[in-house]
Image (cartoon, rainbow, N blue to C red):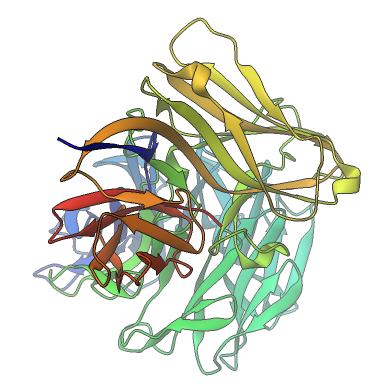
Length: 564
């Protein structure tokens, strides 16, 4: 039988198919006696609640998933709807307990990755003051202001508490952002009412609305975007440098708009009160509905359910070494970011480390392809040593193995150092430097690194940035490929070349005008075309990645790598 030699391009781990994440929401439902019961849900199903026979109203305003535990708030109100007490549950057990009648209220839970913090207000010497609690200690951890006020939202930012809310000044409540207490920096928002904040890459983004219902997004103390007037601004989230916000015209019966970087992304015909954007998608909750990217993810039909907050489990869902194939362009819903490690090596920078991030159009540098890339910014104060680790990669034996990625240096004249390291996993084998930058450039370039010496091993690969007041490093389109020689019969796979390709491919062994279908690695049909007289088709519109090429009712298949 006639045979031909075909060069097939494989990759050693593919992770573009996003793993399903568990979605936790908090809120309340109404019991038979007409009282609200604080509750938390997992993927739309009731998980925990306070007593279903409650005779006072209970509402859960916040939920936090951390290290396998679900933390959620129980705010109890008096019969005349005043603050009674606010507690925190861990899973189904009361964890942080404030005295009944303490007039405490908890609006938000947040974390530094280890400890859990709760923020809201509490009666302090007769004044309802903005406060923060830590873990299960009922004693106040931080008093943010001596004035009457309340925290609406808070985050732990570079070792400091940053919170937004309101405080009483000369008889009027004024919007404010606190940083770690009354002795620290305070930003006065005046008549604007800050409801939500988010931190990204050294900047604090705040969503506030004026008493004339004009919602505005601030970056630090400067207005960034004005959103649609006549609405309440409720929640803000930043992912990959993109700023997302949700506003609504009525908490219980209104319509909403979801914004991305100041532009309407979509406008659901329902009230949305909370948004969380991450590498998996954009999640919004309100009423009895949970949305993901403008699609209804879950609906909770329980009596008069009201969702107030959402927390998505972003722990790595697949810890096994990646098999054929691998490509990561850091795009939403198609990245292995939750399974990558981003960490500061020295861990002595007093919270001022410039970690690896995903970045989008707000970077000031356009990604090489698509809408996102990974980057490590410079730090003007501290020397930085940050690593970005890929998931573990299983390299099979046979053929040349190549790690490829695109690189860009901002401020190349201030270049510090960047390198790539590889170690054999679970073996007493010191990491080896396999590449270092020798010609930094403010233009995207492709780097190819031979990893053939690591065949037959599971390997750990990481990108390392070093610098003090140096450059910023951007990488995109990371792939690991293996070229294997295969004897192929006439009725075997398709011979596709060049491979990798950028603009056009040729497929031998088919008649002109044959229909060819191209699928991405999620199994989605992305292109249908017919071969030209010279057996070629254009692939110029396909983004970088790995594809299957099929024809003849799928009887014959080839693999294709597209690079830009």
